[in-house]
Image 1: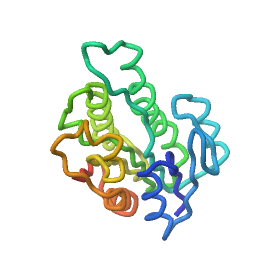
Image 2: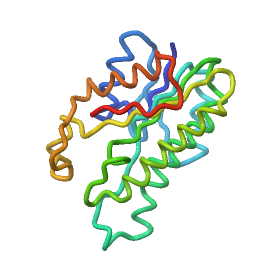
Image 3: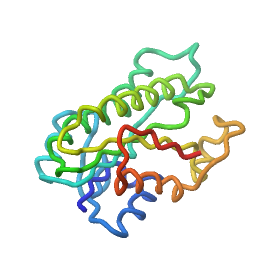
Amino acid sequence: MKILLIGASGTLGQAVAANLGARHDIVRAGRNSGEERVDLTQHDSVQALFQRLGRVDAIVSTAGRLHFGPLSEMTAAQFNIGLQDKLLGQVNLALLGQHHLSEGGSITLTSGIVAIEPIRLGANATAVNAALEGFVTAAAIELPRGIRINAVSPTILTESVPAYGSLFAGFESVPAARAALAYQRSVEGAQTGRVLRVD
C-alpha cells in the first residue's frame, strides 16, 4: 500500500511511520521535513503535492497547529491559528485527497481528547478537534468508490508530558506507539466515519 503521511517527523508521526512502514510504502511529507514538502494551510501546496505523487492508497495526517492560552486574553487572530492549520488544513487535505485515492482507499485525520474533555487554556483546541470529528462523521456518508475516513483522537502522549503535561492535570498519558495502533486500524481495517479514541 502506498501511504501519504503528513507530519511524519513529529512524535506521533514517527510512531505511525514505524508501525505502518513495517508493511507499507510510506511517503513522508511535512512543512519542513520529509521526502515531500507541503503546507496544509495553502490549497495550492496540497494540490501540487497530489499532482507530484499521483494515486495513493491511504492518506494519514498527524499534523496541525493549535493555540493554547487564556480565553480572557485570546484574540480572533490567535483562535484562527487552529482554524486555518489543524482544522481547515486537514479538511482541505481530505477534500483534495479523495480525488487521488485508489478505490477503497482511506483518509485518517487527527483530532484529540480535548474534543470531549476540555482543559483550561484549550478553547481553540476543543473547538477545532470537535469540528474535525463532526466533519469525519459527515464526510463518511458521502465519499464515493468505497473510500473510508476516520479520525484518531489520542490523549496526551507520554513523550509529550514534559512539554504539555501541566495542561492535562489528572490525564493518563499513552505512549505514541500505542496511539499508532489506532492509525493502523483506520488504514488497514474496515471502519469508516469513526472517531478512534486512544486514552
